[in-house]
Amino acid sequence: MPTMSLYLASLNSGSNGNCYYVGNDQDAVLVDAGISCREIERRMQRLGLPMDRVRAIFVSHEHSDHIRGLPTLLKKYRFPLYITRNTRQNCGLYLYEELLRDFDDGAPIAAGSLQVRPFRKIHDAADPFSFTVSYNALTVGIFTDLGRVCANLVEHFRACHAALLEANYDPEMLDRGNYPWHLKQRIRGGRGHLSNQEALDLFCAHRTPRLRHLVLGHLSQHNNRPELVDRLFRAHAGEVQVTVASRHEEMAVICVDGIHTTVVPHHQQSGAIQLGLSFDEA
Image 1 (tube, rainbow, N blue to C red):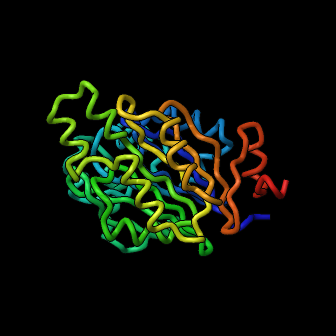
Image 2: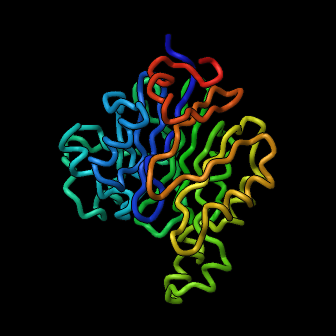
Image 3: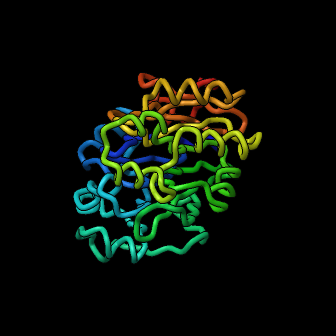
């Protein structure tokens, strides 16, 4: 029997490629496809996430680490692709006109039983968006590539039971690193990425009692460390579970039921998801 849960998994998170899965027992969406179709298939299979559950792909912006897997994925599976006109015009890829769907800021989109709500964010792209995915009064947010915290982001973060939030760089590591000055300015200049501290400030100031799990993502390879992010956030997490997403592999599936969240171990994921059980119910 289907459960009333939402599942969240990062298939990859970082400047080398971003792809995120959110769904329930019947339907799912992918947010971005910045890794190859083959890797998306392999990682979903290892997690027990069936491709035939995916109803659509949503594109946040045109940077290559968010779109490079789209052409092959669309050719093979013919998923509807939600992408704004400005993003499409700047992505430089052939994306199969008949599959393209536009969307508007704040207007909800039905993807099977899921409701996806796009909202504009601040980033150095043509028309950047982030998304929340809702089902049965549960909401999961995918929030990466954020130049700074804006009112839109705060509003949608406060609605989440689980969220994947960018914590891109440590300011001291960025200052000491060997990036050229113009790239450092691009990252921290208000249209690039959120620092660890900026992400933490958002979390501490605007989390609500409904937030049960926070995934930190899109960490810089050269200007951050997973253990640094983990230690920083766990000191303030309270009852919120904290996970740091990998830039090299898929993360364990998170099951969100509104009361608690459960990380489903790899060796139990397929059965737990296909049977609609959370780990505590198994």
